[in-house]
Length: 624
Ligand code: AMP
Image 1 (cartoon, rainbow, N blue to C red):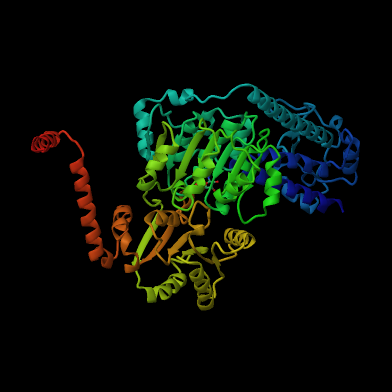
Image 2: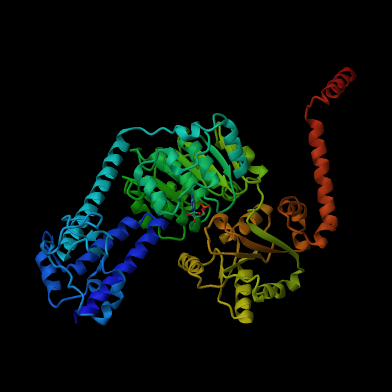
């Protein structure tokens, strides 16, 4: 029968509309939604002919039997509340007008049909516009469809021609007029509030919106598509510095948006490069490299000739070599695999214009350091270099100075302090009691928020503890470490993101850079070997401003970290266990550091000690 079918059409149309509205606020996908809506109209107006909907067919379909206004996807403006009775099929009501010519002309003040100008008795359920009849509704929907098509075409042509212009004109970053219009005082306040500190010469002001960068339209669109509405603090400062072509050493919290902060300057730098490859991004683990490539692809979508290649161990080499031959612009690699490929001369790096080293503290440590330096030797000296990490230990600063020229140092938040949105709990737990304590946490309704990431210090420990957790608590638990195959590692990461696992017991492989957005609780079952590692592991629980908790078990096995824990965790307001605060090791470490500082101060020339130093120097000389 006619009535139920029509009702169905009307109801689904209403649902479409509310979805579309919701999407308009949440993402840039509303154009897509609206197109779907208009295409849906075809189902109301029957199949379109080659030139669109056939008006006669539409009208014919609705002519017999007589239908009520509310049944037809149009609502009578004049009948108003009476429509509620339509279901009851009151035969007294007027049939809906099929043709425009059967409609009267509008009286002054009455709604007017958007197509023919007669009395707009009905509201089109697809567009909320006033129409006079089924004929005009169908015409109106065709017009809307055409308009939508034209708009899409225009947008596409605009984007295409913009890309062409973009490739012809050269890009150079300048502070946006809005940013230039701000007072120095305002910029100082902005930096202060966001915890941005910079060291270097001719540092551009931070941007406030991505639009301030003058990116091509496609890139702005891709940023919105990825959900990047406004830049994060590290992006605000790092993007303009990177776009100016300066070398950068940046440290910011884990999960603060560092990847996009280096990817955007990379993209703009190599967009017009003809030589391939022209950008190199190095990361310490395959998972991190895979994640960086994913983000790079999202941001580069639709930009011409912007191919990426992933060169990482654990995945077969031939497909990587094959892709490398396809004029790829950006290499994302782990050092070992890239060196292997360099050794067989399957890639030339002399065209590289920009190098990024992510997680630079790990990358410049023994083990990786030689590999990274060997790779950099293959690159010509005039490239731009960006080094990033959450922690920049003092020990690597001399190497950093060798790798960077006239660089800008950007720090967000407290230097080398753990992510401030992670609540840190440090518990004194002796070795034999650790398992029991972990089970208590996993049973505690307030603390247990799956998926939980438990860090241990060895692979065997990860396997054993994972089994024990599953047996005792019945929770879905899995171990993760470097001896797992690449397929297993990928499956585990996906399982973690899809909440298949409630607990993952991992070695440090999951500690770095990976965007484990849904992790709310981290347990350091074994304290990591350094506080830098601690900062990274704790940071897994607080991605991009989300709050999380990190519980760390500490005992005398980590005694060499005591003073560092006090210096780096106490300032965040965490209460430290008395066993740690009263430990003789702590006091010894503190005393030694103070002595070292004193010696250092004595060897420095200051206004206060300069005369003493000269006198001592004279005395030594006269004695000789
Ligand atoms: P990262 O620190 O680069 O690993 O980024 C952490 C997470 O933040 C990732 O999921 C990014 O996609 C996301 N992200 C980065 N920048 C922004 C931004 N400006 N707005 C929203 N999300 C972002």
